[in-house]
Image 1 (tube, rainbow, N blue to C red):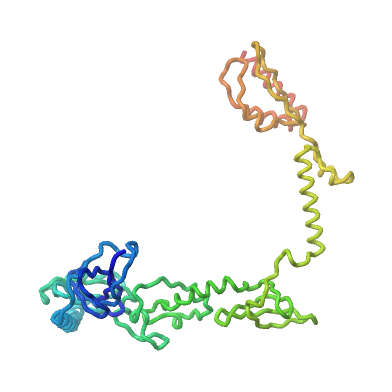
Image 2 (tube, rainbow, N blue to C red):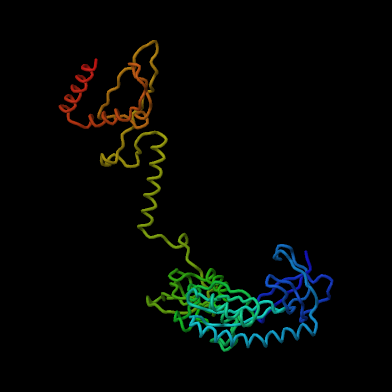
Length: 399
């Protein structure tokens, strides 16, 4: 925990924390502090308070001194010089014919640097402009390009609500705003109605977004079936501001009527609570029977009797044949050669196993031989005899 004060350098600008040290600082006082831009004059907007270390941006700089009347006079002189520098810079921009718009000019407290803020559509080559300004002001010159939102924050103005723009009045940072917020709040998507003086989406769209999201989670969705005091119906529209829902209600006489109810009086229909239709009951029964049949087959390996004796032959499953275990050859005996039959083709697990060849050749996978056997099993008897004869003749020639 550290004791800090909040200091602001511009009206509506961001607040920064500083260590007051041994000075007795109150809200509204002026202080002289050291910043990245040099020595600056700031106004205290937050009195001394205790803050945790994780909420403070390191390093925490200390207050140099409390502002004196002479310091305030120096600040007023700098503001008067800023207006003169603005006029001179405008003349230089027109002389160089640069496509840029000058927004504001700012002097540092000690007068060691002059900062010019401008906007432009793209990059601007202002090197010659900087040289001319440096020859006039005899000090360091900095030209900084800003966006349209920063321009509105510096200049200020009135929004569509008739009040000063939020960014100039109290906003310290800009938060992201998307068109999705306008859609969820049922606002007009016309750019002229949801855009601010900067031409971007209004920052105030973010203010109520959390409330809209929270309320929409509680209200029934459009198209859901709900129970109303007048009967069941379908949700047509939700009004988050009034917290009421428009429902198309089915009346007892068979007609429909659109009525509004507080969303807390509505109950969403559950799929388990509504009565089942005859087709759904039959479907559930068939599903249970199929589940029992599958469990019977998994336990016994026999076809399930649930189909009955009159079931077609395509639905009756034959019991799988048990596979004989292989025994490794012992006492120099050769392993008997297997022959594939059309009724029981060789399984992929056995075809992928390795087996030692009787002639002492290196072992190889029998996947390809198993595939040839399966292909032979599917051929006619004459073709199988011819292929077998070719294989025997080839083996005899090798010998």
